[in-house]
Image (cartoon, rainbow, N blue to C red; front, side, top):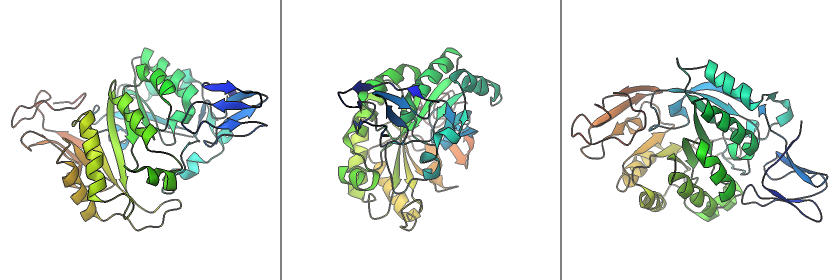
Length: 333
């Protein structure tokens, strides 16, 4: 079931896809680098429109989003397709799966499911698991319907999308978790088949109009130097020091066989990043104090997390120790 794609130009021979910074030129039935956009008879089609390969009711903290309605559950959906090729991808089987093998749902059916599976009341939809940017047409239509139904929309993304489609999404997306996989372009080119600069522009644009949290997967020997993480923290601070950053522990996956990142390295990098940023967390390190939220003013405990269990100590959205307002949306007292 083909669905004509957005953001492409017809050329004398084939098409030029303008959705992401790869700008794939396709002809004679070729498929783009994402695996889900194909040229057919001079038009570009989305192969994964409506194809839902995974769905679940997840804790919002799993996205991860720690500063957006803590403790809530969100209806999460995903499909196949990604425009990057990360050697450490944890969802590579889903990403490179056959979209036609997945269940077909209309945008209205997805919204109906989200409204039915509340926590206990309906909350929102997260477009996640694979790369939602490569599900653009379906995400846009579904998010518009969800917004009109009073639901929140969350995008969990690699941020490798062009500015024009991103700006079309912005009015209907309430929160983003965006991967910044390293703070060096060479890393993106060698290990992700992408580039850094478009991701940075994506973060800057999204952060100007929506809630944004960032994830940085720390891979030993490749992007784990204090110098690199400090430069990353400086850049985030230049946008807004209150943007939450999740430094996430790497484990061997897909083509990567390096050993897991030592917890001591994670702790050292967290302390370094906190020199410039208000909120820095450790991901993939269960039951660690690095998952808790501390007041950037006095250091008092605001939110304690054990797994996905959240216990808030805030009073009317503020630190109970010094009264500083917490930069957390939807925080329950």
